[in-house]
Image (cartoon, rainbow, N blue to C red; front, side):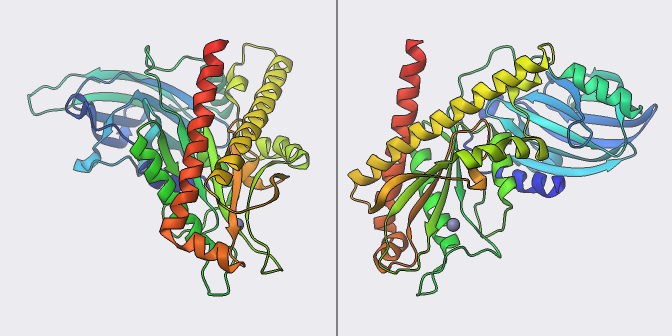
Length: 395
Ligand SMILES: [Zn+2]
């Protein structure tokens, strides 16, 4: 599961916007090598410049050793990619790398057994054509010691001292995909295709404006579990999550869009899923505070997230109306949809219209009509972040 997720994530990171400026200056990781070492297993990272890094372990879910690096270019084995994976050896089952945030990159060692860093050192190039090397020697440890060290490490600050202001990250989730076609029109048109087309258009529009970073949960016709859609948004650090769907109705006259935020029944599921899916809130990572304090803070975060979701829905509804996009009666609705369960990412699910209504289907299938709706979503996103910036400035 985790591996599948890592692979999915790998593909998605490719959708993130990367600023082309400063490319000449950028640090590159040239190779990642895992092999036998003096204390067990040795990891060597080759780079074109010395690396600032922070190493720590994580025990939640599966045992990992994480190496956080500033934003850099992954050019492992001569191939530049936003993310990738490689084989392990000994204590390391395998490694994966990606940009885990707008300003940082992460190398994850998935461990075959609990391990700790016995020794770490950096080597300068010996000859001009050589690379800088960062060497981590791992040795086996007990599970107890591993868990303890992963707890101790969780409250350390990130490696970069100055944090450039990040653009808001919008994660767009095209509903369904792969073996799950979603709702079907009489014509045979599938919801999964309409949602993907709309998601791509929204991404392109948002990217053109240059104000946001954008990622899709899928950028092709593939099946993704609902929990992975939420996990993707959380792991990328999304500031807003928009799931796109198209409805089906028993009555072919029924048409119009609707915007869903989480219902109170759905809210009750958040707690269960939070523990089941290992969705740790950032406030909970601080182990220096008493557990009860963290619980109160986590509760505050969830309430604020819920308010933000409602705030966005209340902007999206009139924005769609403004471009004359058909809507159901009382278009802001509440349901317990799984993709809305994220405790700390404001989220809405937009049913763009009915596949079972010929007018809605025609609008959703026509690029010109669809882009009217996409423009309305874009406008609502602008309003959402503009007003948030104002609200923050007034505090
Ligand atoms: Zn759907």
